[in-house]
Image 1 (tube, helix red, strand yellow):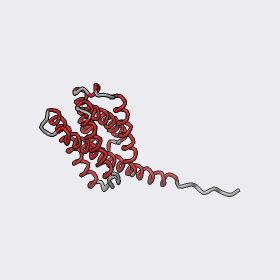
Image 2 (cartoon, helix red, strand yellow):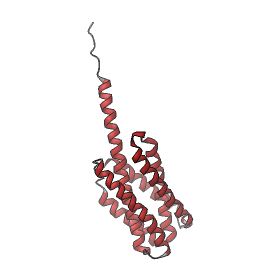
Image 3 (cartoon, rainbow, N blue to C red):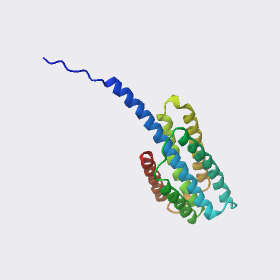
Image 4 (tube, rainbow, N blue to C red):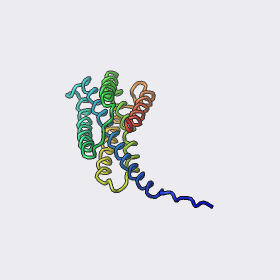
Amino acid sequence: MVAKKKKRMPYKAKASQKKTERTTLEEIIRVDHAGEYGATRIYDGQIAIFGKNSKIGKTIQHMADQEQEHIDKFNELILEHRVRPTALLPIWNLAGFALGASTALLGEKAAMACTVAVEKVIGEHYQEQLDLLEDDHKDLKKTISKFRDDELEHHDIGIEHDAENAPGYKIMSKVIELGCKTAIAISKKV
């Protein structure tokens, strides 16, 4: 009878777990950076149509200022953790601005419907990340928790501004939500 060699699984498993943790951290930072960048561009597109000084423009500017805080933080985290940003930033630049401007051209309610759809997906996305992150990433969890709360505030602002009465609200929301979910899935990896 030939003795079988023992596999060295515990060593490989530990190395694999460490790599997975790093990969997960990179995906979180990469996708959140991309999402916050896209959000700043959506609001830039809406402000380009409404202007900063209109009543709705001031509301949008408030949300845009919070999104700028978010992207600034993720710019820091990209550098601090040496994470490669998504290669799709030029596409998110154009797509975000186009989404913001096109919904604004449809009117204030449509612009707010866009906000509601985007922020619903982002709020859920951030919550999934909070559930996934271990306690050894307390600072990142605190950041994501605050940003999730800001995104949910934006969602509520959209609702308060009659988003649900936008023409084609249900279909527009589903299309925008699907686009956001697709962008999230792609930006984690690419």
